[in-house]
Length: 279
Image 1 (cartoon, rainbow, N blue to C red):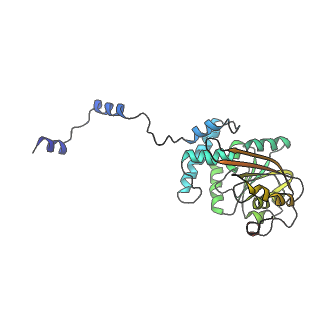
Image 2 (cartoon, rainbow, N blue to C red):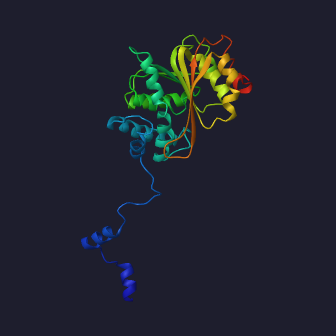
Image 3 (cartoon, rainbow, N blue to C red):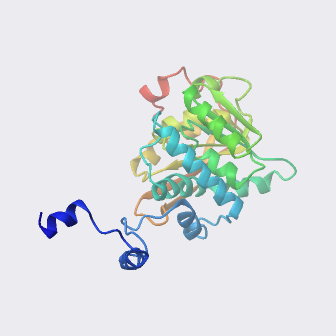
């Protein structure tokens, strides 16, 4: 047997010195496309969205991301599964309306602001807003019971109280006296075109409250919503266009003030607003 064959069968054991040399030769940090974790993304962008984030808040967001990724293995909650994407495109995106929520809270001093997140899906923007503002009186509405069950788990794990979970279509809940015109704020994130979204959301808002629509680039969509907004009792108060911090993604926040009650015939029966938008 040759010396080389003997070495292949009986390789030399690594000494402590060998291991130390190998460790020293390895890069101090693996470069995986410079991906960032949840804490890094939130910390770097908190000033741009004007949201102070405590260590406790960041810990809650990290746990939320972990639960979201774990549940996503067995249930389709999001196409975004990396920490940086979740933090930026879900958490930061949701918190871009936090300053508007604070402004509404100032108008109703003496009680907690009531907010309904229509078509909440995996909890956006409702859960991030609740993590940031614990005294928020939050209602999460979704048509899929499994998603709401997951959000109940999240609320329990993060000790988020004063949250209601409503399993319903927006059109049905909007005609229900328990929810109709009961909220200071209604919000929804890119659920539908703005005329449709207004019919889903404005019926939930009390007179004097507002609907905060979270959209991408609107273009003609805003003009097409004029009649729906007026008919449903709203008036455009603020339009804020910007790019999501750290990305080139266009975002538009539209604040629609509820100036009069929504006519009783709205919202129309389930499916009608999307098939035949008010125009």
